Image (cartoon, rainbow, N blue to C red; front, side, top):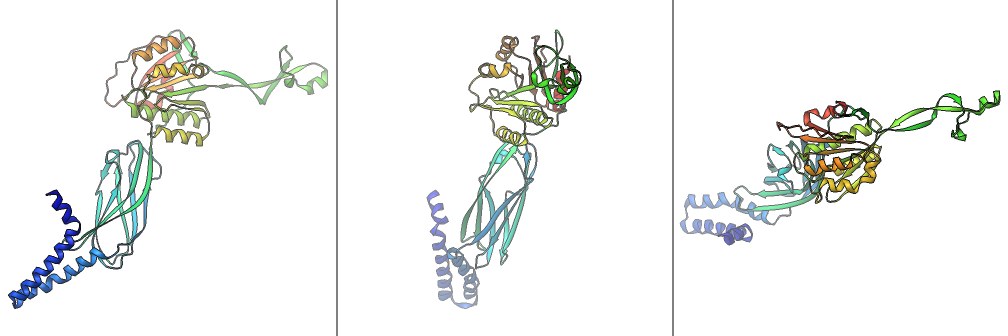
Length: 397
């Protein structure tokens, strides 16, 4: 049965048209009369058009696809507009346009996935459809399939036009109120580790020279007046290095964990903070000292495609990066606080300058909050609707 179907879909259709023409002509010849010849002449235009459609070259040009908006985040809706031009010399009856290569699991479709046109002599076409609730990742469009048929479906022609286009759906971003991290521990309030640096471009005053002052700091104008060594005073500026990592060893609440990670990066860089990022997946990547928007965009493109595919536990990965962790405040984003992670916090607290662990919970998920009484470590359970106050939560006792 399947073999017969494949045969009919190929050259069998052409043979069927010829047989139908022979049968109607033979019927008219042998039967005679008005009715039999009326049937023959009535079918002849349709048969001739079917034969013509079977051999005529199909020309579809200027195929393009526009995605609006151009920058998409998880949960957004997108409007896809496909335009093309028909330059086939014969009039076409019915044309079906269909997208190829879209992963239907990547979003919710709104409207029709394909479009049917009654063509005639029309040349220019435009077709729009919507994709709702986009999922993070990379969506690949491979091309457009055009299907042409005659009045009764006797002849079917198919033409595929390759028009590759990929769209990256970035993580969902929340506007986080930026505040320098300041943690409250069981032993009292402790400011998250800051390093004090002198901004030598901002002189705030002069003072008496002290042993150990740099030679370049001496205020030579005052020395010329009273021959007393005095030293310039500069503004002290606090810098805070944050080492941000995402747990890619757990699938639990992973999408929300990626969203929070991206939001923290955006907030810190927007407010000129010092932050480095560690991706802990199978292909581990470190993005040191992120400051510019171009570097942030590169990380966002990476976060758009990350998966919970780490073959190592997060505690083992962090243990290998202790040199970087010791020089900064570790901020870890995870969807699950495992026993191994707790043990890592206990063993590393004496070496780390400070550890903040955000444990992300999903919608309507009941969280049993367990306090972790370890010096220099703070664990914060946070839901998606609380992302805005992530830095504020760190300062709470």
